[in-house]
Image (cartoon, rainbow, N blue to C red; front, side, top):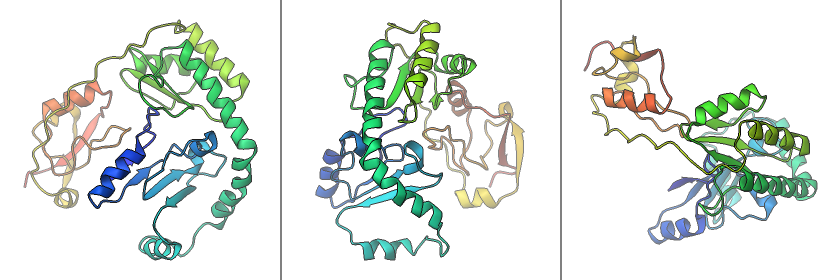
Length: 287
């Protein structure tokens, strides 16, 4: 069983409860904690009960790009090393590994204080602006998810003011706040939100579009990837068989996979999600 916690919106799963359920049925629980490397510095134990958890140190800590950490319970180091031989390189980056080791004292000292201050400032933003709060669900203390009727429009307006959100969709704008964002950064964000008239507004989000039905599988993904393909305009794709995946990100889950038939309902859904392309790669001939 794999869960993502925190999600892109900052929502935290009840990992201990999920782990108990998994273990009751003989399953292992793996947590994709890509955006949660900083949580232990806030007194959180977001992976308690999980068998494995992977966090991307570079996303929220002072670590180089592509650095990550694996936490494991009930598994020896020898077992982990043996399993890693299935995919590990014989030429690892010692610079990256050394950087992670150098980061540890900072996480245990100065980093804790800086992240606690970031969490306090984020909580104050949630009180003043239309955002997800702990009243709605357990949240990453350093994630600000604004709930607005036009998330894409607000994101563009913020970027015009020099504020670059992590992501936006129809009803949300997500900002990841870290210890690197000091008092001046928070003041600049507040000025931008005030200038857009968001202070004191109630949370309002656009309704999510209804999910389309599962597409018809015409051939296997392998067959589609190896078959001759051609690009067609977006409006000409209905009825054709996809040679590529159509996957809005986040969450990166394909709405259509290679080998599945594209329908107008699927394209309407992707349009409502704000995901569209000029051309779509399709099979030249249906199998």
